[in-house]
Image (cartoon, rainbow, N blue to C red; front, side, top):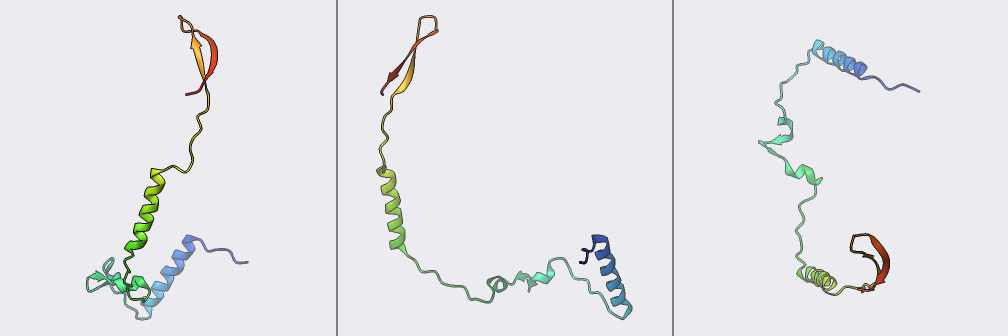
Length: 106
């Protein structure tokens, strides 16, 4: 099992390949940053679609109207009614001390 090369080893290998390329007559061109992704000064938009032409969208106002009507009907009438449960109320005396607890339905 081979160990993974370190960053320093990778840098050294790339540097040696560059020096060997130059030594054998290779020339390095200067390219401005970001220029390689541009076609005539603009991004080539068709490269993002993986070769497929842009598809036309079909408007479906009937389907959207049906969805909106269902959404409105849900907000107007709740599907379940909440039952009122009794809750505990504490009775205090004149000095603010609790005297007793009672259950009240509201």
